[in-house]
Length: 92
Image (cartoon, rainbow, N blue to C red; front, side):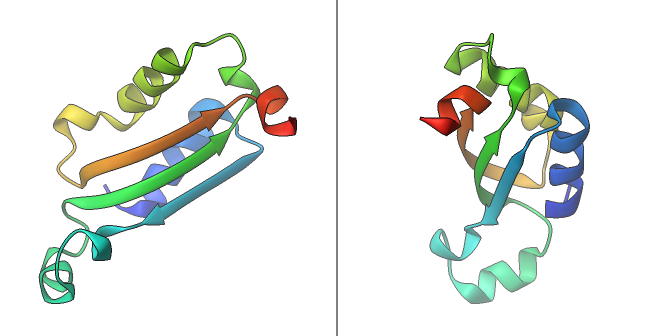
């Protein structure tokens, strides 16, 4: 799963007002290795703001994102740092 596919799945499920998915793979390993990996085993930072998160706990938000991205079976994601906020929390 590449970056565009990840963003698309998250948008379809959560209808976020803001989403920022940054590939941070270059901070995890050498550039030469990154070039050989392409869309495999990427490391991401995700910030996502959605009304859908309002009734959820932080753990439930992460679980929901993991489920949508099928993290356990997704060879394209080596790791993901998540900041998931409701629209109310984003406004504060």
